Length: 489
Image 1 (spheres, helix red, strand yellow):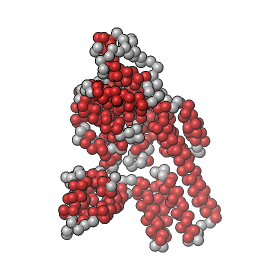
Image 2 (image 1 turned 45 degrees about the horizontal axis):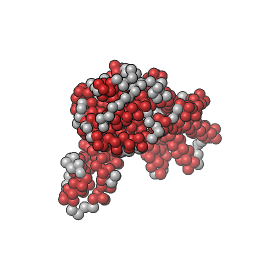
Image 3 (image 1 turned 60 degrees about the vertical axis):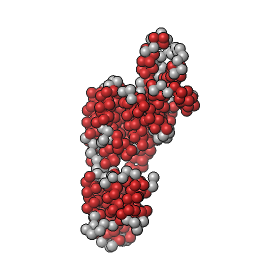
Image 4 (image 1 turned 90 degrees about the vertical axis):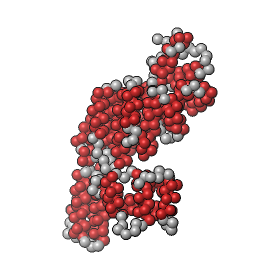
């Protein structure tokens, strides 16, 4: 992405209050400089095409260097946003106070410098931000050293270093725990679908060891423990136990709202985990309660608000899809078209493609196969690295049956061969059944397909939760009197 593309994305992600504040700060009473002109061109959103923005900029500023203007405006916007975030985020505020303390020390204003450092230490302790607490403690000792430790006894010196060791110990424990959780997530996302429970045993043993041997307990330790526990249980298929862990994690979050990061990414992930577990056990009534929890999440970030809105939409949509209420799902899709669907390119990549898949499933369920086919193709053509493995497989299969529904039989053999080559030996029973049915039905051959809902792996059940391929095949079989006798009861 070019710098201009990045700049356009940044300007379009600004909230109304941020735009107003930025416009006030960069506006000049006299003739506006080049970078103000560029900001206004992008802000008006009249030209979605970057090439058109370049053309308009050259038209209004023939002597200006676009690359220089883009770089300068990007720096200006980032500096203003950092200033605004100091009032919204404790991390920004604490780092700002550290920088102020550093300037005061360099200017030999020592009393105020140490007052700032004490304030940082107090706030960092309150917010359990041990990384910033450690920086403040180290700065304090370095500055005292530079002043030859004025009025500091050896006993006091040792107490200060004891506190630094204690802070480092807490940071180490938190980092070890965070590492294990993130490694678990990495294995689940990238290879979990082909691994068995025992492949995660080493992580489980290490996690239990950290929790049991920890000399202190804080929000981060409790949060990481419940996140690890719930993700492990969910991957193992024990959804009820995972749900209990997620409920406990939600209680931890709600008791420590002042400690949440801004934006509260982990809190969003937790609520989504609860909703995913509730969907798995078909508890749609309780899902409504947690969807409202999603709506209540506050953030100053427009980008994060869009991620939350996407989660709200999807978890309102899932019960409709699961219950085959596709007409209502289509209405919901239309309701969210302007606030969400048309802005979906601003979502994080994985969430963007997930939204696209379910948008296409809504079209498919309503018989709008051409629309669905185009979206499924865009999703799977993006490649396995862009989306989760299961959603990628689902997109491939849904594209295939969209071809079938549209009667594009000349393309089906090519697509089936491509899917078999892509999936290789790791092909599920449901996928094999679907490929066999489409291959035979598309050429008008008689077929006898045995449908067996037993002996499905956890991963195959997750695939069927995205779209019920078995029901689709069963419906097609029941629609053909000649093939119905081949269906196993």
